Length: 329
Image (cartoon, rainbow, N blue to C red; front, side):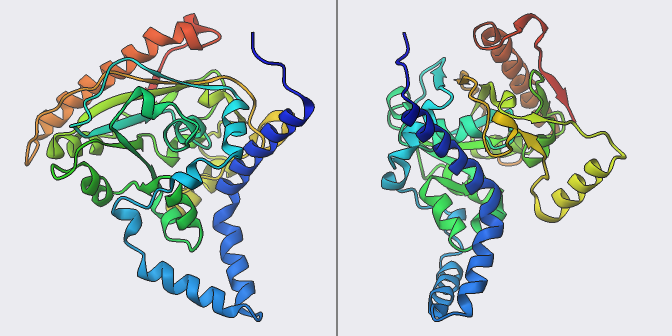
């Protein structure tokens, strides 16, 4: 029987989850404004030093980042994990002498389950997958802004670019796991409770990269991720859809108007989150993969993902009989 929480503990959990949402959604706008304002005060040297450091260290996000155990184990992250609650389930052992690409679905609004399970020190990932090091990918823009980039890298974030993935998954390194959100920011608009729409049909770049590097492909599904917020699915031709597409094209991010707990955009609903890590798909190392090879392993991967969802949905979904993956685009 779960422990009954005190009012104080509930408040701490809510504050922890608000901090996560506000950090992700506001940091790119607030930090640059603060640095700009600081430049015109007696603390102007701080802004100059920050900008110089950002320029000097600009490649770090593409070369493995700078994960900090101290930052990943900050006390308030425990309350963040317990807010939902959240669980991490493995279905097969992974060899620490190999590299793996964890292909995550769905993206959700904030990729909450992926972030908590694969970045924070409260996760049991090191016990479940001993000998492996985890790196979570993010939009390049998050690794270019002063202060924002340093905070993100301390929590284990790296660039989602081909250059960054190649650096960590090549033959010279072993035991690395890169967390990649296959649907990307574009999938945010399909964050609808009870729905399981995934952008995958045309996403084949990760297959080509895995073939070139010979790293294992691991399907990962986050049950409950799409239930954290109520998000209206925009229809093509509407102002919201047009605005979303324009912002996506310009910045790589997606404009979303979510409603969470208590009707607040910054407080996700406290629904259970379960991350299920599937069995690895071994792919051969091919210097120049043909389109036929890419299509073949894309089909193999898609089938493995669907099977993973169908096998576990009866444990982790409210209406499993009517829940199916809808693979689009």
